[in-house]
Length: 252
Image (cartoon, rainbow, N blue to C red; front, side, top):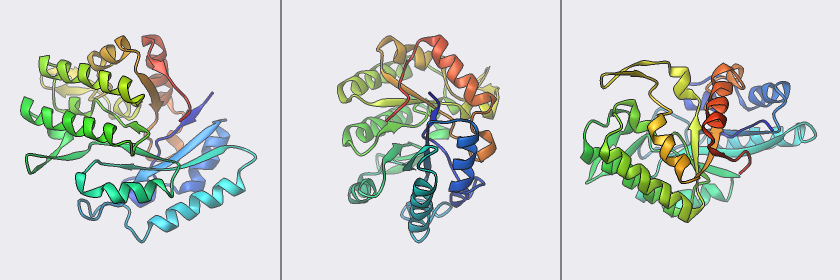
């Protein structure tokens, strides 16, 4: 079964292609399910992505494709969005209009300061990242967490990271929550990170712990142009996840 719930298109300002472009490519690649999940509007925190005025257009494009291609593929309407405590009513309203929301901690507020998850450089900020992730999971607004090991973009796996990953696994089991094994980390390629030559993510030490606890895992492309659906990196991510013996789920 071939599915993907993590795709981005032109409204996010750093991707190309529209909803129908992705649907046509997914049909050509013989996907069973394609989820459209651009970055959600969050004007309080971001001014470089989809706007609130564009959201109805985005949803209309998805609905049009659902009807047009209903005999060829299942299409799901989603958005990828950060977790901020000021946005609860917004999450509720989005869930009434969508099939799913993806939890993605690209930025977070910790001790009244905003941090970027790509730039975590000490244990205290790492704690803020994970505590935000835990709160997002427990909120029950989200179907899965995108690239939960994104902290590895600038951080090595130390005892503190191991402690929080163990805690994350326990919370996922308690909440029956899914973590995403993200292929886009492989697309980014290897580089020297904190003295190690490796991919920014997926981080194998992290996923070894997730495997040990048999947490549900979904492999997604996180592609930013239609031609990348089912590309070598998405295929490689699926292969790695299978060989690791992760508890893979295909359908939300």
